[in-house]
Length: 174
Image (cartoon, rainbow, N blue to C red; front, side, top):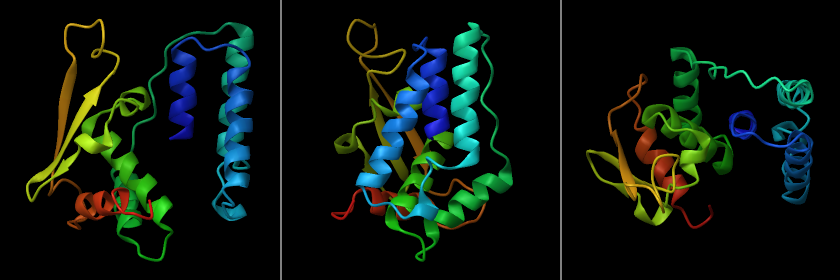
């Protein structure tokens, strides 16, 4: 999700200092939040290469639009299993759930900024989400808000990852 965020910033026309600032902010938050070293994103090679790649594109002035890499079925299955794994920390499981929600709702990172937690509704049939202030909705736009829906049975494993992840997302500890 951090790579998605940085890519969205790049596509939106960010300044040259943004990649380094985002990387430094992430490292600070992980350190201040006492995230275990092996669970941190900031020292990850893939993350560091993404930061350097976007920084290089900004210096060159390369603004070609590229599509985000597609998730394979095996990657989605792995995320579903992650959400269901009680051995993993709640925040890791919640991030896996959030990523699955982005996939199944076809959301950009910026769309999730307008996803209001108090307007999410889980029922036996699925999850309803209200989005405001997206690229196509909000103040000054013809449409104020849109709704997204994920059916309870969506997925490949057959596990109730949607309901379990929603429970973590809405829990007191989270």
